[in-house]
Length: 126
Image (cartoon, rainbow, N blue to C red; front, side):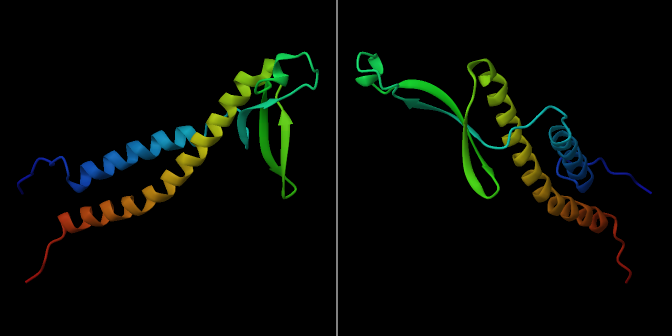
């Protein structure tokens, strides 16, 4: 039996590529660092003092976390000391959601590649 070299788009190479992608996505999903479910953004608020610079401008910056609890939209002010890790945890959550979506889509591609592998190995009886 003669063996052929696998072409770059062969079913075998495609399956290996999909498996590599699956492992990469699973490493994102299985990361144990904390996630924050919500949106972190910077808002501005005036303090109300007539002589303050914010009375004429946009106001004082505040980092806020918007999230849902008990079916309602909630908002919390993030302490200045926590802003960096809250933003990082929010970013990890967005990456987590993107990885889950990509894993769902990957399943159909894997089935297609496996069927391609079956067809490449098929022997047709005549």
